[in-house]
Length: 215
Image (tube, rainbow, N blue to C red; front, side, top):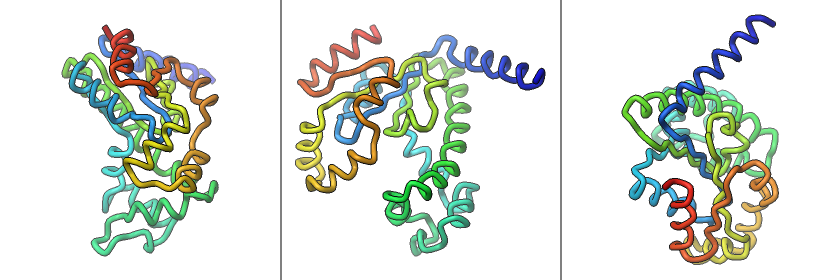
């Protein structure tokens, strides 16, 4: 018990030290909500360092890594491309509608990604970064509330998101509804996020909301 309490105290101190002089912002929201536009604004206007967890996960799953070996051991070699790298589409198909397999995959990948992010936060803090932005659709599920100073929910109603995905990616209504069903509900996002950025109107309105948070 004493060791556990001491370790918790050390973890809390470490997080506080990481946060000092640098604001850590989580950005999340459903597919089609315009997170990419928000990230570009944060990067260009506010010189924020942007960390997209999906990109981190891709790098940590490259051939020869611990994640790669664990995934192959669990899901088999049929999720590999001809060059031996992971075929992410095949892997996604295996877990998309199988909650148990998805849980296994997340338990392999999420801890590795989170450890890398914590180290990267320290690196960027030493470089004098003012804002560190972490983006992921699964930010809440992956347990980043304890790392972020704020978590922003980029909100757009489902109807508008559906139209955007139809126009930009050619998604059918059926495909879009399946994706929506696999993601957190609006209510859950609002319950777990500290800030709501309404991105359903003009982007100028979104810019003003973000400016109110950062200026």
